[in-house]
Amino acid sequence: MKNKGDIFEVEITDIGNDGEGIGKIDGYTLFIKDAVIGDVVKAKIMKAKKNYAYAHLEEVVKRSEYRVEAKCPIARQCGGCQLQNMSYERELLYKQNKVRNNIVRLGGFDAKFVDSIMKPIIGMDEPWEYRNKAQFPVGCDKNGNVVTGFYAGRTHSIIPTTACHIGVKENEEIMEIIRSHMEENKIAPYDEVSGKGLVRHVLIRKGFTSGEIMVCLVINYRAGAGSAKKAGNDGASVEYIAAQKGLVEKLSKVKGMTSISVSINTEKTNVIMGLEIHTIYGKDTISDTLCGLEFEISPLSFFQVNPVQTKKLYEQAIEYAGLTGKETVWDLYCGIGTITLSMAKAAGRVYGIEVIPEAIEDAKRNALRNGITNAEFYCGKAEEVLPKFYDKKRSVAGSTSDGAELRPDVIVVDPPRKGCDAVCLETMLKMQPERIVYVSCDSATLARDLRILADGGYELKAVRPCDMFPWTVHVETVVQLSKGNINKGSSERSDAVKAGDFGVISGYSKGNKAPETTNVKIDFSLENLDLSELRGKATYEQIKDYVREQTGFRVSALYISQVKRKCGLEVGESYNKPKSEDSKQPQCTPEKEEAIMQALRHYGVI
Image (tube, rainbow, N blue to C red; front, side):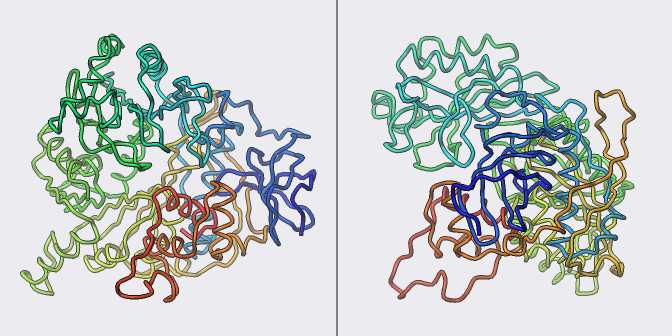
């Protein structure tokens, strides 16, 4: 075991799930943030465990061929872009491997089989200024000056900036207008500790095809020189922002400005947006076009943040659906209906399910806006709506019915990071669609769900990652599954992760001058690392240590068990039970819940 404070020179031979460099000293594993695969670095151990340690990058002794200068001057401090010091070509390799290795390791699929169905990752030709949405926290520096920017990794400390290289150019102009206006008019930012102050966050959205821009200021309703007391509950207090010596007038001069609003959020929470929205300039929404359809976007709407890659992702999903114009399609977790309506153009009938009422209303409006009449939407949790719908139709039609609603041709799922609920997966297997298209934003939970579907009789036909978030560790994946006997190779469980050749990576070539695809040998492997203590399982003490190291929070076993239950993970009977029927249990705060989730993802538990 190594000790805290020890400094070692080590070669970085691998990349972790969070983008950290991985090196080994006599079989002892070091996780080093900001180190790039191929680097030789000096690193100082900050926290040591029996078989591994977290270390701080002290010096790059020898630069990797994949190391590049980060475009953003605050990339290392900001928690947004973890991979800006790695070449984009190598980043795509990392993401391709991340998806592949999770499916093999966590899903238990045979490595050779997975290699045979893996398609090349869809990269971006221009991986900058791609985000159509930005949320800037507002606060004060140590001298009391108003600052806006982004949170440092795993903290709520604001790194001051008004610009972002992955956001649109207009962000900088808008944020400087708001920051300077607050300074000039002595408008206090919200303080998380005291609960006082007015402006909490600024949301900016832009329609890439329409050019329309939306600004929404998130405000603490009861702050602002007593304005709320005078206004009562009629919403008039929002005029406090609008009346501040021409803020709206200044913002309205920004090219493309279409909507300015305020969101009321008085809760002590890390949730950014409040549900109460008041428009103070222009329209309530902006519009954008995706896959030939026009969508209305409100401040609360979920709309993919990278429209360029979203189009490619959805086109791949539609291809995997294999639509001919007659099919019945269910779209679970449908949001505002982007995938649903895109498939409606090529299907006979489509049904969408979404838990957020506002999103369902947006979906219905978007259907009308685009003249689509073969789409229906249901509000509720997919794991509740789908089973009820299935049971109702089955009781009416009889157990032998193969009606279109009871036995759809295609089911599409695009769940949040936690993946599909077990009840939802069970119902999908009962409905026996010919094809399932799984769109995932977390390859770990994707792998878990693919194993369940494969064990239920579905064969993996194709897996294709898509880089929706360049310079970050996140990657989207779309998977095609087909009903039928499970291929022998697909059901064999593999205990080892082996690297292989993935052939090509599409949509990216160095300098954008080479052919569209480039043959690439994968040299990223976890098979030589002893990560049994870190990946796929973790003790409560390991989770506690990780959370404290990364965030400073102290979390109890009770909190960890509560979060694990939410993720559908098994928890011992002694956990999460009150001592008596009348006793009240403390509940994990949202901040600590997110920190525990980060730990579970880090160890590959979810």
